[in-house]
Structures are given as structure tokens and as C-alpha cells.
Length: 540
Image 1 (cartoon, rainbow, N blue to C red):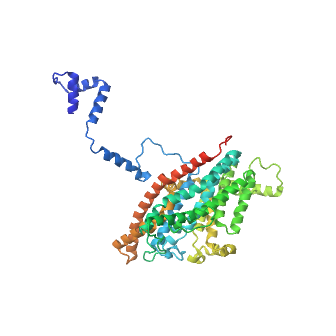
Image 2: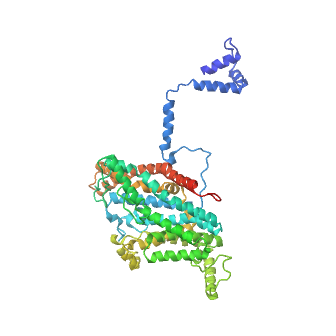
Image 3: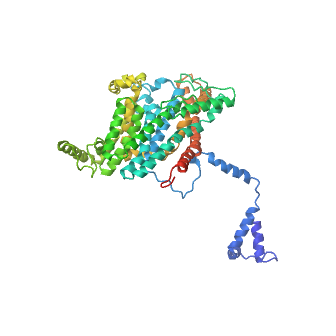
């Protein structure tokens, strides 16, 4: 106010203040002043404010970037980004990653018994069908693989169905080029802190919580940081070997056994897309279905999941082209019904085509009822979840009510291959993605903000959670149990719940940082590399 008084005095003359009759006189004089002069005054006035703490304020503002992305300030006029058509896949992947973290938490804090099949209604709720998926690892990983098969084939299949083969070939080449760095580069970069953690002895060194199912990881602890870095590099080279093909247990992060399997399955999808690029759509559907059946017959469970994801994506395109309900997609997949324009010259017996036409007309009338559609989709969804959550045979799966018949139907070849627990969950994972893909009302559960956020950070979340659990999580569990005690079940649960709350905050925070500063950057780097090295059309 003092500066304002001086300014008014200068405007009215140098002879001092002129007596004002009322406050209106002052406001009128100020309003008559040139706005540019007011701006000049404001600027001078702001410069004269002390700036002793401005440098600290600037540094603090820079630290905002370290907060989780959902805590960043946003403009009130900023509109949320529109969700793309397959956004539900991202949400489903995020929910599956969320459950994988709970699975590994259950292993370091609880006994194996919570993973047993349920025997009566007096058992813990977590052992009940469907509910048990919240702490199941392998079924959720299988959902990952189906989603990958779907996502990798979605764009090439769409372009092929639009007869844009040149663009489809380019998209396929780009995906193949970028797949290895997309998978392995974030894994290595986000696990670099494991070098210091192992050297400092931050891991649990093979110890375990009271009654826990598994001990903590115990990577080799070297004498010097340089030796530790070399050991990590050798382990990372084995993990990133593109020709290994099989699952590799990694001492620094055992959850990454899925990456070589993911890479191999991706190459299977790329190979199928290339081999069938010039095949008619209906024939491609039939051939992909036969490949999936072959994988199922010969116990190639991972390949079946990727090929199954590709089959689900192509089925959705087929049903979208014909404009029919999802039930007709099964007929298209079997090659019994052709989209309009592809039936000319067909040599199928007329009797078979007539029977199929009658059956599909009946099926169309049934599906015209919206309530019946929702009921059928919901039953299919629950059925897929029920089969997906089948307990392992060594955890009482063959004796669990509701699963005995399924256990008896597992093919002998799968038992001989040592993977009987993979048969039914693999089928259920494809079944689940297929059901959600044809039920928009089910997709809403995976397009909410929480599921979409989990989808964005799902890959970094998967990469960082296990080292953090076996180091920070283990020590938090010990610390909180020291406060609450573990002599009773209630005290143990309270201590573990407090530890889980702290661990989840840290894991999500680190995964968020990993998503923004590593995962997104690697995706851009791989695309940049392909753009720089790729051959342009008509160029060299």
C-alpha cells in the first residue's frame, strides 16, 4: 500500500497528497491511469520482493517429478485422454500384474497351505474358487501371454483384413525388430540397483519369515562392487540370450523367467502372421485354430497361449466384419461360415451348410435378447475364472470338490511332459480373454482409472516387485512383527498387513518412476532405432 500511495502521489503532482473527499476519488484516479503504467508498477513491485528462498522453491518444484504420476498437479481444463478400443486389455494386464505381486507376497509371508484347494466352507476364504486367483501366480502369467498374443497380432491382422499388405508387412517388421529391446532392456535397467543391494547384503540372504512358504532370494555376494557388477552382467547376458528359448531362473530377480518364454512366443506369433499374410481370412482362422490345437495336444502350453491370443483377435475382427453377435464368431473360427463375398465357389456340401444356417439362425434369435447376452457372458466369465483358478495337483487339486473331474481329464502327454498343472489354466486364460473381448459391459471393470493406471505401470511393476519384496519387504515384515509380535494369528496378520501397506506404497512408487523414466523411454528408443536403421520406401 505504501508503494501504491507513492505512485498516486506522482500521478497527482509533486506537491504532496491532495485531500480526497471519499474513496471513490482514489479509485477514479487509478482507473484513469494507463494500464501499461500499472503493469510497469506491478513488475517493479514484484522485483523488489526479497528472493532469499526462491532458489529453494525452484529446486523443490523440480522434485515434484519424483512423485507418483497420479499425484502430479493437472490443469482443470485438461481433458482425460480417450480410451482406445482395446484399452480393456491394458486394464486386464494391470489387474493380473497386481495379483502376481500379491502371489509373491503370500509366498514370503505365509505358508503353502493357503494355496491348497478348498475342502469345506470352514476353510479360509482365500482358498475358495475364483477368490484364490488373487494370490495365484501362474494363472495370471498365462493371462499375460494371451494378452501379448492378442496385442502383437492386432495391428497386422487389421491391416491384412483391409488388404493393406504393404503396411502390414512394415508393422510386422517393426514389431519384430523392437521386440527384444522392448522386453529385455527395461528388465536390465530397472534391475541395476540389485547390484548394490546384493553387494550391501540388502537381500534376506536366504532367511524366511516364521512359517513362510519360500525363503528370500540369495544372490551371490561378491568381494568388491566391480566383481558384483560383472556377476550381474553375466547373469543378465544369460537372461537376454535370444536363443535360449526356455525359462531361466535369475538369482537377482527370479520373476524374470517369463521373459525368454515371452520372446519365444512373440516370434511364434510373428512367424504365423508372416506365413499366413497372403491367405484368405477364413482359411487363416482355420489354420491358426489348428496350430492352437496342435500346441494343446503336444503340451506346448506357452505357444498355445500366444497363438490363442492371436486367434481371439482374428475372431473379433471376423465378427466385426459380419456384424453378427459373438456367438457366430465361433462358427467363423471353425471355417463353417464365411463372411459375405467369400462364399462363391465353395465346395462344402449343401446339407452341412443348410444345417449350419439353421443353427445360426436359431442362435441369432436367442442372442437378440440383451439380458440373455449379458447372462451368457457373465456365466462364461465366471466359468473361465473358475477353471483358471484350479489348484495345483500337488496342492490338492485332484481332491478339491469341483476340480476332480477336470484333474481326471488332463491328457497323459501333459503329465509326461511334467506340466499337468498348465493344461486347464491355459485353456481358461484364452477362454477368459475371448469372453471379455465380446462383452463390453465386462470391459468396464478394466477401463476404470485404477485398472488403467495398473495397466500403464504393469511391466515395471512386474520387473521391480520381487527384488523389493525379498529385500525391503522382508525387512519390513520382520520390523513390524517385532512391534506386533507373532505369537498369535491375529498379531501376525496385523504385522504383515502393516508391512504390506508400506511395501505396496514403495513398490507402486518405484514402478511409477520406472514406467515414466525407463519403460516409456525404451519404447521410444526402440522406435527411434527402427526409424533410423529401417529402410524407407523407395530409398536405401
